[in-house]
Image 1 (cartoon, rainbow, N blue to C red):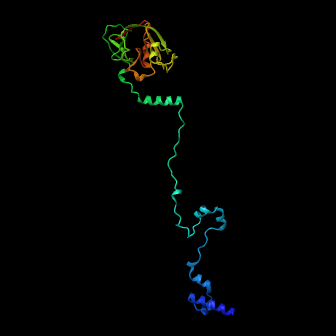
Image 2 (image 1 turned 90 degrees about the horizontal axis):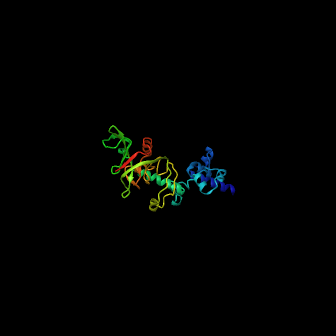
Image 3 (image 1 turned 135 degrees about the vertical axis):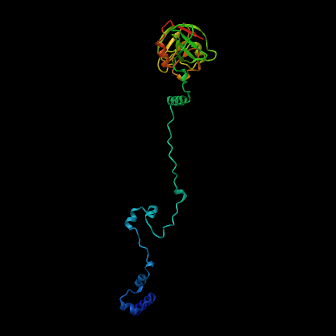
Length: 264
């Protein structure tokens, strides 16, 4: 009975494959289910492309999916919006500025906004036909020039800053003293107007009197340098006459105590 069932199965498989059972046996060709897979290789299960040992090292889940190229998974995965990353440039937050840093930043910005020095206020030798003798200083307040008479019809001319409206004056004085890098003590009248000013400041580059000062008689007025050269050619002071530091140093070396100063 078992023999008959085997022959029946063999005959059925040969028939499906289109081969007579006897011919298949005589030709030595594979029979049964083996013959079916030999004739139709496309129906074989797809080979596993990743060994189980390798798969176990992937950790499973999404990582394993990325490295397995099974036909049932290819093309089915679509990135979800939640996996998309934003690549905006990273913003570096600067630390807050301290008081000193903020002051320096403000000074840098202010310096960029300052006007350029006008070349007409550069020191230069000019003609002079007045009556004052050599060595006399003449301050031309309206035009913001200071002249040092040289004689022979010539004078050295410097640009200066003069008093603000209400603080200009005229008259004749003498140079009563000369000081290098003078200290500065604001007078009470100035402190009343500007209580924020220091009560005393030693001489130096930051001192508003600059590199040199020539005091005029017994008054509070001076011809002095300045740490603000961009103010030359303007009405800016409380009655003093300010010059660039390089110019006041030059004038200081040419003028003696007792020199006549005419302010017009």
